Each structure stands twice: as structure tokens, then as C-alpha cells.
Amino acid sequence: MNLKLSVLVPFLIVSILTFGQENSKIQIDYPTNVEAPLNKKETAMIKEVFQSKSKELVFNNETFLKDIKHLLRNRILIYEEVNAKAQKQTKMLSEIPLFDDHNKNLKRDSKFDISNFNPLKYKLDFFANGTYVYRIDSTNYFIQVTSQYRTQN
Image: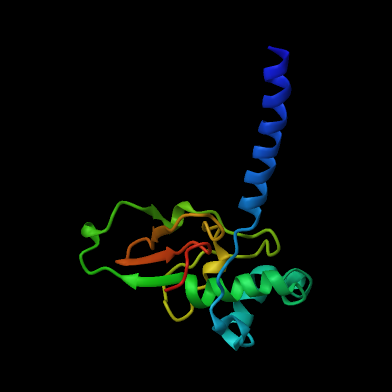
């Protein structure tokens, strides 16, 4: 019995370490558009949410800035579903807490305006493995957040 354990334990440890290393090797395929500088609207969205911490947390953090660009440019889709009943049941935007960690004065949008909507204001599942859809209350609009780990076609 001790011989089996002495062989089994190192095997388990090596297996766990190998599995952990393979999971940490997951890479995100960034489209080339993340290399372009932020536009005025993207910069305003970041500043609205991160306030005085914008420079420290986003603008001076190359990796996080790249993730935010990828999120805003490629992974968030806002669409209108004329037959909203055909859409799968989803969480309402009003059920999602505000991301007000850095801006305590952040307010929910009283009326949805697609041209001024800032998805960064909400604690949506931006960095999860799955793709999530949220319905914007009192509208036929939906927000789809595609996983950053999904390969680009």
C-alpha cells in the first residue's frame, strides 16, 4: 500500500501542476484594432467610471488598457430585438449593480440612449469565460458581452 501511495502522490502533484500551468497559458487573441489609440468617447467612458484613478488604473496599465479597448471595440454588442419575446430570458440591466468603486456619484441612465451609453458603468460579466446577454429595461435593446477567451474568426 505504501508503494502505491509513494507512486500515486507524486503523479497527482505533477498532474495538478501541469493542469494549472496549461490553464494559465490561455492567451487572448487581440484584433489589431486594439493597437489604435483611444478615441474621445472611449476616453470619456473610462474617466467617467475611474475618475481620479483613470491614469493609474487604466491609462498607465498597458495590459488593462488593451483589455478595455478590446472590450469596448470588439466584445460588447448592443442590438435591438424587434421581437423581444423571442430573445432568451436574460437579466435586466437594472439588476446589475453600478461599478461605482471609484466614482461614488455614478448614476444609472434614466433613459437609454445608445449613442451615450457607457457599459463600463455597470458590473457586467466582462471578464468571465462565457458570453452574457442583458436586457435594457423598458426597451427592446440587449447588451451582449462576448468572452475575451473566444477565438476571433
